[in-house]
Image 1 (cartoon, rainbow over the protein chains, first blue to last red):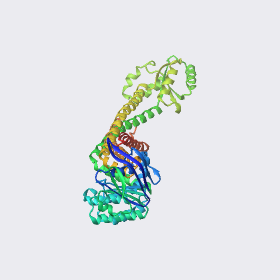
Image 2 (image 1 turned 180 degrees about the vertical axis):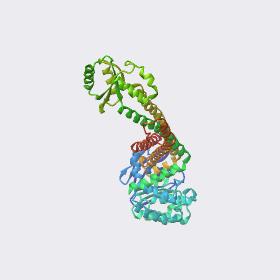
Image 3 (image 1 turned 90 degrees about the vertical axis):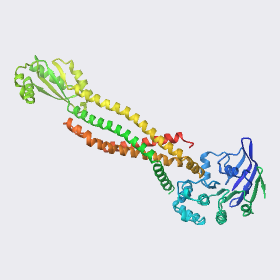
Image 4 (image 1 turned 180 degrees about the horizontal axis):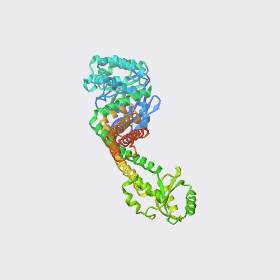
Length: 217
Length: 297
């Protein structure tokens, strides 16, 4: 579960988020839609503990992560998945090495880890690329590796920043199917997009972020 | 299983780090090997000198040259006095004639010279054997000082200059070895630290990703610590191989040519393990230094 209460954030004199309150229940998929520069990525960074809010509270799975120590944030992140807009992969490593990194950090047992890897590789059609170096992949493939890495450890919370940007419609459909199956297994999914068509796929919980504020749809 | 997965990760990261920056790793490896080789050489010389000094100490005999006017009774009384010292194990009386005989046995061509010598030139003496607990240069010197003032003894000789020279040589080896060793060890630590620092710098992006994935500082540091320990250990191993080659080709042959009584020895298995442990510690120290300074890599 993700809860944000009256969160404010500004950079220099520029206000980015203004009194944002949002609750996403356990196993729910929430889609935040908004134009460029509306603060979507900042919102995810605050939830992920990459940045601190100026004011307000952020609670993840009943833990207040606002202004947490680096060590505490590490343990929270081990139970979270983050899909970055720019993939954030280790280019010198292979697809399978990048994916299993999340399992190593989370301390997932080897046997369970292998099953999870096989499952996400199959879902995202990456089996034939598993031993390729990430540096040799196309943009869409890199994004799928990033999604596989975020999903492989069955996180409690999955944060996805424009996850389908470089993907074609087939791959996008597979990613959304993955999100739905994860949500059914109890993962809370929070994704951002500026694409109204993508947002339309998640009519159950869709919020608009515009002019620094959340506008429920 | 969790630890096993992490260990596999650490080892594969270490392998990648060493392979990706192999030029730098080779420089660090060779430098630490040469540093430890120098330290090892000094240590080897010290060990052998120490062995020789110890062997000399075990064979130490004190020659007490006696007053030529000493009567037989006075000589017996003197012997009792000498034997009363706890440092003395036994005494052997060597008369003027015995001394000449012994000399002629060693230098038979000088018979003519010997016949002209009187008792002043080659006086009678007591040869003192030391008790095992006192077979050290310091005990011998102390005993010699005590005996200096005993009536009836005109001169005391125990090859002190030769033993003192060896002793000082041994100390000098420790001193030079320590100074050179400390300097080279610092150099090795710095080079290992710089190698790891550079790897850390080049892995900055990867480390950022690891933090995003929830990796703790200890998780991130693991491979770099192993890299430091691996470089130090391999450096120590390489230094021992070089030391053995130098020992076989140079030191042993020089020793054989110049030192007849003693066999030149290589480092003991314990010392070899010690050198490897030192190398590993040196690498660990270098890695810790770089990780401390690059906490926010």
